[in-house]
Length: 223
Ligand code: SF4
Image 1: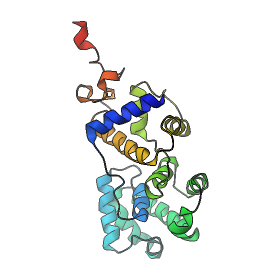
Image 2: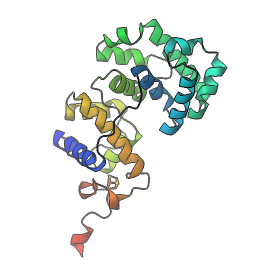
Image 3: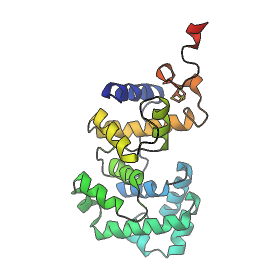
């Protein structure tokens, strides 16, 4: 993927969908909680779980740790896998408090912070990068299943590439541009949810003119 190709897809998606205003959340900590809860579920379920946490006045690492585990799990129930997520969230909060919270963690360089996040129970690369990009505002490109699907279909990423390889390709193509990474990931999610779905809606796709997977491409010129 060349820088020109990466930027051209970005511009087309932005022109199509406009700014996405990510990540929804009132504080960096709320963004981190959302990044953990959104694993394997959709955002509306996360919003309900976060609303429950707010109703308990528990959207704070120390208050989460002080909640009985069953109460925390009950609050997280709308986000699915709530017992697993309660354990993950508690593990994350224990680490967060032990490391001195946002103020101390903000002082770490991105690679150190990324490694530390990946060492926390239940935090994989996508969740770590969501937290780095949207809560700590670091120039880290988030890769998800939508990214793979859209860019495989566009012929800009080969099938079977690992997470790190894909992340590096985007970061090399785009340069360390936090604002662009923020918007680009959100646009990819929007496009993957609405248009480049498992069964793609190529006839309405803003990337269709340059997509080798579009069955309608050039159909007009062949008649
Ligand atoms: S043209 Fe079709 S396959 Fe290609 S990106 Fe758009 S929706 Fe996906």
